[in-house]
Structure formats: structure tokens, C-alpha cells
Image (cartoon, rainbow, N blue to C red; front, side, top):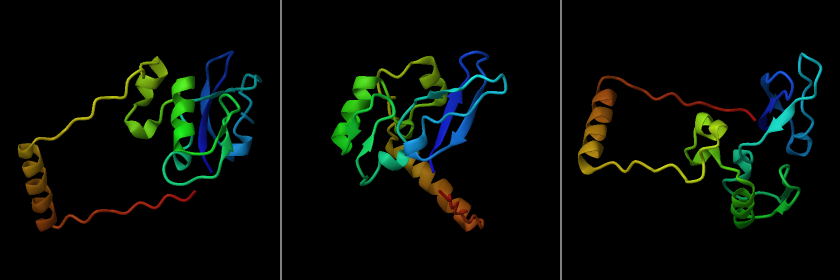
Length: 134
């Protein structure tokens, strides 16, 4: 299930909550008693990458049936995909008009990274595999 963020309009407290996509607007109640407001940063990553079933946008109510619909929806509503490299800080400040510049490694950086990785493997490094239950 996707995790969403909510913020209290009265005391500015914030929290994360888990709901199905259909129930994402059912936000929790703040400790001060006020109903919290859903903070919209992007659609859940599961709906952005790979195939997905059409769904109703919780932002503007339109039906999103494919990646082109998603891209248009995000442009129209100022929504960004956190997986595209945006940080929470820049999104909270509203600094997301342009996609962040991607660093392109030069040949020396690539060579150094490969040499470092080979040295780590030689010294016994074993990567850990994380499994995320949804």
C-alpha cells in the first residue's frame, strides 16, 4: 500500500499514513483534533513505472490511463515524481519548475568507480539485498 503525507492546517504537524489509492483522501485526525490535509508530491511510484490500471487522480479527479496522461497531469498540476531526482526539501520549497540537472560522469570518474568497486569485492564486500513488502 502506498504511503502518503498529511499536514494539519491548524498546527502544521505532519505525519505519514498508509492507505489504498482509492482511500488516499481519508486522512488521519491530528492530535489537536483537526482533520489533516493530504500533501501531494507525486503519484505513488508503482503507478509511474511499468504498466498500470487506469486510476482517478486524487489531485484533480481526472482519469489517468497511461504514461502520457500521467505526464500531462503532472505538468498541468505542478506534480513531480520524487523518483526523478527531486528532494523533499526542494519540493517543499516549491522549487521544481525544471527537472534537476543530471550529473554525467566522465571517463575518469567511471574508471575510478569501477576500480573502487573491484577493490571492495576483492576485500570481501558483499552487497545486501533489501526486500520491501508492500
